[in-house]
Image 1 (spheres, helix red, strand yellow):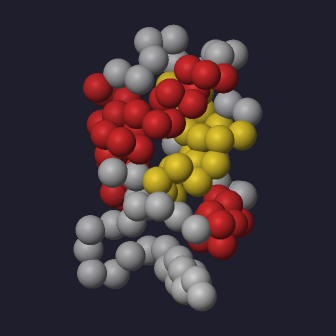
Image 2 (image 1 turned 180 degrees about the horizontal axis):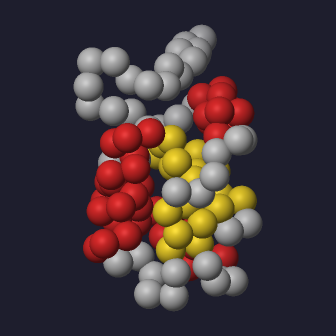
Length: 104
């Protein structure tokens, strides 16, 4: 799902007070870490992930892999924090996104 700028801004505001719930350590993005991210996305829809290590390109690769594998959307990558959103599958999502504005 591609987020609009307004939707990203809204989600960043909601995430401001959140603490990271998953940490990607020296072993990198393992299957166990991906499962933990999926569980937390199911529970919260919007999560922060802390990535240890100084390689920005590797963090960006982790972000793209997480979004591709879990059907999530990247909201923000700032420093060593990744902000990820995935709407719940249920009838009532926890987070209500602003509607996308129509062009034209």
